[in-house]
Image (cartoon, rainbow over all chains, first blue to last red; front, side, top):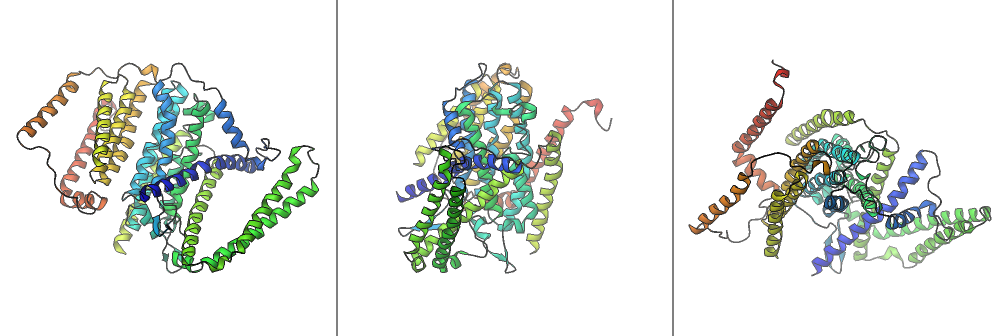
Length: 423
Length: 171
């Protein structure tokens, strides 16, 4: 029974992590786009005058999408049309099952590995699920019975076939280096150091493989510069053109879930997953008390600075808008002061005197935070690239996939195999 | 639990196969076939063959069926325009083959080659990537390579048949 509960808890944690990141990513996309294009970005939606720098907009979006009329084309293929968004979403979240988000955590004397399913063939499972990822898009595009959606679906298929091979070849190099298909082995192997100072991350031992993999992941997630299935300027909105309301929302969420999956895969395969460089698990546990104290002090300082900044704004802009928005700086200052007070209160509990059990717990949580931090960075990279690069032309896409990435992937594999055989 | 999962996957796979045959629309047929492949992968997983299970999804459901759907869609167009059947092929092979398979199985069963348990759990690592690799790239290497040559020949043959005679480079 505890095994079932454990798995359930891990599944819920992963699910909350993904679904919680989706609105934040949508916000980051809008704010980031605005930042890159020198605009202000979303700043209208508010709850009681508090706008949270636009973070209220995703909530408003959800409300809009839930209550919007679900317009459907008459000449659709009913079953496929209804199934496509669910297929897209389900497949997008199922990759998470094999990605470790931490090493292990000890609760009530049980050592729990922090991965939902530690498959012997985990890396292949990732490829298999990625290869299914295109069906939601293709089915949606076909069932809507519209030439533009149809073109979007066809484009998605061709793109997926072209880039999946490079993705597999890039991963094969990595599998050779770490001699395993088990993702937990691959992540654990990245905790070592080469020559005593360089972390043995995938990106260090397989730099070319990393470039190929990240390009293929961008292509698989249908994000710019590979968003030809959507191609607003060419085929209106591509595969989701005929979808509205919650069905569109599912497609939209699936895209962001794919981004989080992509970011998690990149960090697990090439950036050490939960490993903190130069801080292996024993060192972390030995210095857990000091680490925790230092963290708390850092939280107090940072939140104090934020509180002071908000207080100054509250002083300066006392009646800037003349409505509820004037309350915003004061509420912000209050929140940051509460965070600082909470951290100070935690300091009173003498965190430098935690026992070995506490030290283990701190080390586990620190590793989970390391993983989530890497995922957030790569998710931001997706947004960054989208608003920096223009879209490929279709022939350029095919040229890159078959004539550049495929030979490079093969060469990378051969060189890796030869080096591994000689060393 | 294992029995339940076997009958669950097995009956769904059977359903997928039947639905694939009786559907008029080629794309819907292909979708049911994908469904059947995924159920088959579940059965492989039950049989302690994780590598085969994942390969079933990766190669059949993920790669080959994507190509199939791509081709069907290219020939048919969007949903309603493509309601017509794709090819006018004779139906009798599809009707004749399953009963023949059942007859063969029945003969085997009646002659005493019924389903017998191999007994006990398979050894650790059975059906894993290492085990499969040792068999495929060791013991059965020749057969494995021969199959790849057969596929290559088929590929070149399809290319030669599909290409316009007059435009061949050596003409």
